[in-house]
Image (cartoon, rainbow, N blue to C red; front, side, top):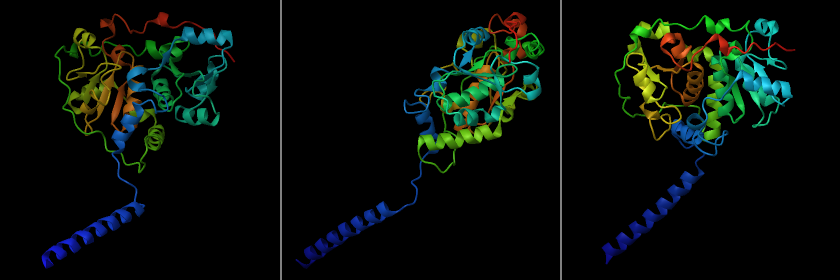
Length: 332
């Protein structure tokens, strides 16, 4: 009987202690630890994100042609054209109605102007690559109608086209190979330490960090990559047929546009301990994707001028030719 009472008292004491401990936990104001990178990825792929969909795997890259922009300019369509070239080059000639802003100030400007998330925004640079970086930031933050000018100002006026005409090359055509390489093993996402807990808070902190570092940290030349391709995890961002048909940089792995970068697909095969080099046809798509990956915390870099700067004569499409320049007039 005494043993039974003792057991009963112990049980009651245990229940009271557990309840008190729970109350203490509830009153604890210590922030709960979250896996920031996973929270951010899932948020960006959800309908709750500023873009309202999985931008990286549905829309990226957001690009508009010179012809389409010219049509809107002539029609007087309400839009904002932001030219991120140097002040000197901007003053030497720009698209009618464009304003000049440094690339790192575009997001702040758009936000300060209170532009609607569906307002048309065109970002122009020299070749489309810096604009791809800027536009991706705007898209990630919910400006769905922000687009980068295809081929940059090289496609607008003949005075600007030298930036592309002088950048095509065949320097590495003999280095390309057609071996199919397997992607790395799936692993952890990058470690983020913003101290935030919600998707939007983490996103804002990460975008601010990427904007602060600038496009300079997000680009790399083909000469640097070919000094030692083993130093990088190289992503060929083409379809599989082009990857095998044209060949690819030695050791490069193929990731399919608008498919592979999903959390449930191949995103986690990207390494967190090695610089990732992404290349496409022109450097414009890779600039946009690189921006997205850097927001997620990856050390990603866009290969400048893409395949056009490495195997130009081999290309049958996605190729700069001087007739890509429409020869439009500059405006006020």
